[in-house]
Length: 447
Image (cartoon, rainbow, N blue to C red; front, side, top):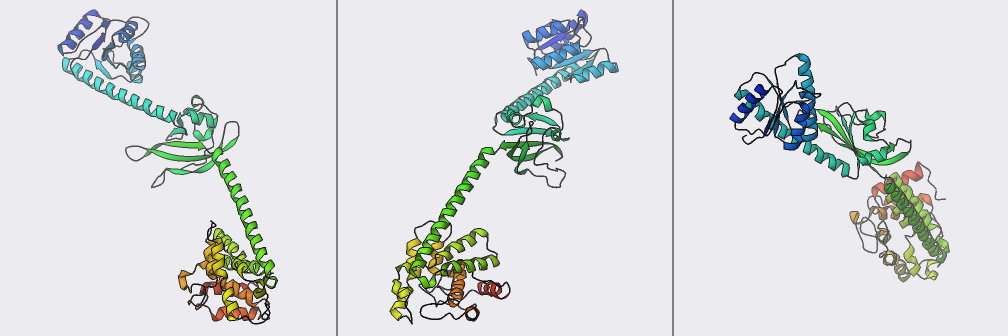
């Protein structure tokens, strides 16, 4: 490492001269030689040498240790101590300033050269480390989330501006204090587990003034070389605006759901007004269908789809002439064929409406049968939606338990016998089993 600039601070002129000769003999330059701590600081500011060789005991108000401390803190110039004093008190003072070298007089050229080169290398690494720290600190301070860093004991070592603003505490107030002593963090990870990972979630942050705000938070461990945890990084953000937006969206969704339910109900009532003999049929089918779906363990959102489909499953009958719907006596083949068009008509009416559920398909399939004997498309087995299979069973049970213009009501016992007879052939086994359980064990009634 030639071409290094080495300043010398020594209050004994002969010793200073010997050191200068030795330094130059090693191929280094000596931009200045001074004898006091005050002058050392001035020379360091003016000439900016690469290294300063500093005697500890100097004339004046500032000794070498104090001068070395100020020079490194303000100018980042490394100092190597040269001294004949090796007492314990002097060594302890010197250690506190974290010198880059410490040589006891007298010393030879080889020892001096090794110390200078090690000090220069160490100083370069220290500068890079400081630059890295400043770089990381700038990043942490500039990000939009709150950041708090703690050491292995949970004491705060860093807090960015966003964290200060959200918590109401400044970094200066909480530095080296236990995090839990001034702020309640929703997530309190235990990094002592065998496989520590980042913990994340939502919680409530209690600010300094006692106000609680919802936050989204993550906590990550800081690992050492041996995979030991020596700190944690807490990152959190204020989600009040997001929560408010979610609440508004939820309310809007509920309003739309209510409006949709009202519309479906109005359609159902319109259909029943044309067919007084089947008034309430769709609502009763819907009620039984939902009860079956609940017994089968379907999720609430899917059950809601079953309810809405059940409420208007006969919407296609709006196409059927009223005189056919209310005709007493047996229907002709032509009249039956007209009635059997109602699943197709219902599908055509609803197919372009974007429901959250496949309403149009459920209505299209509610007269299909597992063995292909149903209509309008003779679908079989899994080609039929589960919701349609549920409504088809409920439809049969309700229809057979109610009076029609062309026949008296066979009754609920006959209806249950019918679905039991067709179990696994025309009707879904599980749907039939749950329907039977509702009537026979849980005493289900339509109204």
